[in-house]
Length: 431
Image (cartoon, one colour):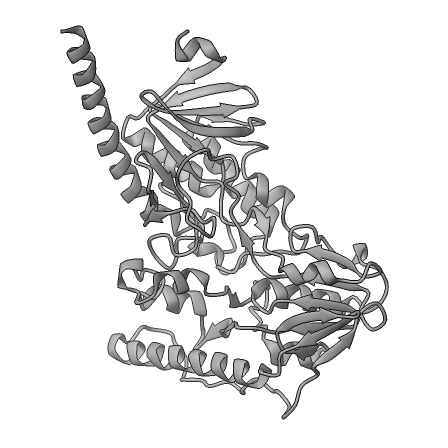
């Protein structure tokens, strides 16, 4: 029985793109420009994760003027604002319409495996045969919850940033937020202002001001070339890809959000959560050092920005600034009773991609996808949207443009070579 007849075949294309978020749609646009036949498969609706896996008050960490996709800049009337999750979803959906992307929604991919002349992509609505596959399902599919969560007392409710929506869903009483990157700080502030006492467990973090010398910090990161830094220019790529997201929030007044602000609003800060024993949470005593290191790195970046500004003299900037160091006492609280002082634990400890449906020899010993700048170890497989995939900006919406331009060229070359090899083999068989 032929491969096509063994299962229901929905179609045969050059490329299957899995995921109709910003990365998948950007790749679709460039594949179309390369005249490659392709389809974009999406388990929900376009921009599904923005609509179903974000908390209510979330806003982008980048200003609207930075939000663009290939051939599609921001077109609104609030360039210095910050999109909500719903607005980001609408922006992406409008892009799909603008580019006439060949998207099949409500189509869940259940397995991707190698086939005779490429790959078979099995879905809930039939299978697709293709020569190349693009994984554009994003980097934030599954929350990363540490194993010590298993020791949590039964009377303490646990939520992740994926399941949290707003403070109204929380039980009365204290809340422990674990993680002090952008997500942890934003949720700690929101919950504290709702009237629930919050304790924030702080590990390694990146402190940044929202505005520096009159410009959004992201303007400086773009202008100075920081966001365009290539992964090949980094001493330790694995570590660079694990750097936490900066402590930022997008608000109409462009306010800075850091540990000092939170403490001024009543949030208690403690060190990294190290363990749970007999219903007692145990925290690291290195909080002071961790915060001092974050302050040091921020000041180094600001000094680099000042140096660049002096050499390039951009117009309309203010004077140099320095910020109050993070306020940490000589000693910090090392233990907290769970179930009494704390009724809810909110894990803001990061996310990771879910590639459980990939039936390919493509993972390392830790279960991470093996790739080089988005080109996977299995020829014909590509990945988009991961942190620092090719550049520091790769995981941002605007960062997809450069990545897909380069990878779409690679895909086109790969398809040409594969097609030539298949034709050569067929001619050999015919002879």
